Length: 474
Image (cartoon, rainbow, N blue to C red; front, side, top):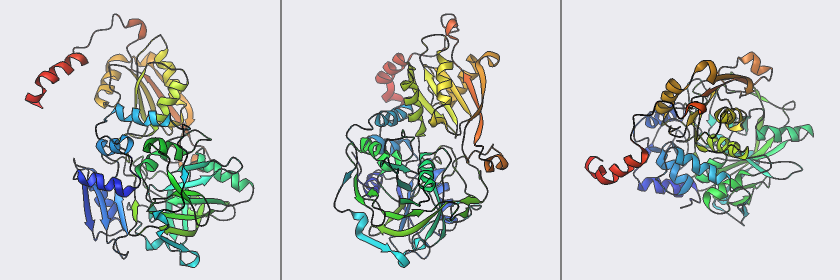
């Protein structure tokens, strides 16, 4: 099924017994710490917080949303059954549907318009925005979607960028150089203009997923979200900017980002998805809030970074694998059986080799993909290796890779200001590059007929015995 808003998704997960409600938790570190504790539990429950600090009852925060394979599978496909590489395939296939009749549909009204606050009445501190980690520079909106329109071209971009609360009507925003959002900002600034933005703090899972993926320039994440949802996303024009905003969003902030030379603010630090504080306090652009719309009893759907570990990662499957997989196929690389990403930047490609050099060719193309942003390594394995199974991947590296011939280092790959390895001095110079490791962990193509065979039952035999005897041991 397609979920029209976050509330429908909560109801579905509640029916599975995976939603835990917590009342009275403080926004200053306590909420973030409990989120992290719950994420580490085998059940990894979704948490719905209420009565947070001095905020009115009913002003809620949702965390641990898509941290399990089952919940991510439901959000991607409506089915709870996809796991591992099959989840990555769902991302990939939906991404391929962009432009196939899924443009957003404007409607006359939506629940997000139930309350509108403008001008001097605007106060983002009325909402329960947490301070997530002890060393964070302040309270952060984590996982919100920023909506921008590209000047001249007119198409709409959605992105997820970190947002620090500075005061009741000002947010700090940090966007990595090279990201579409930063390019759009600079187009407005080049004309001496402020960039209009709308920021959604709670929305359907399809939008959460779409805004997390590298969609090609000129294509809107709204179209990707429509492909995931199985139909166009309903939008209404923003009260201040006129930008198309999700009609069923929980809270939408509207405002503008002035050129940095006109106004900026020290922002950070913030504990990021790398598992580190990777940038100290720096001067960043600000969002001047002009309007806030919200539903009755609004829900902030938060995806706070905790680290790239099972249960703690923002998604059970890293969404960038869809970009890498599509880039490989668009480049003519045949035989891709799956793509996975471990940790924050360890990308693995499973490939059915067809010729000598096939694996190296795939690795080089993947290294240049936007989907390997801030990556450290690209590993290519044979089709008998599950790229999502880190134990199998390490086994392949240990037994099929000859380091002297099958390992390469690529210098100055595009990285991110979140990269913990790049020294701060280099980041301040605008140098967001780092080396990449390529590991060919495939059986050498010219030795495939003579390489020692595996001592494992075939996939077909395993399926047969499970069908026959699984009920006795499952």
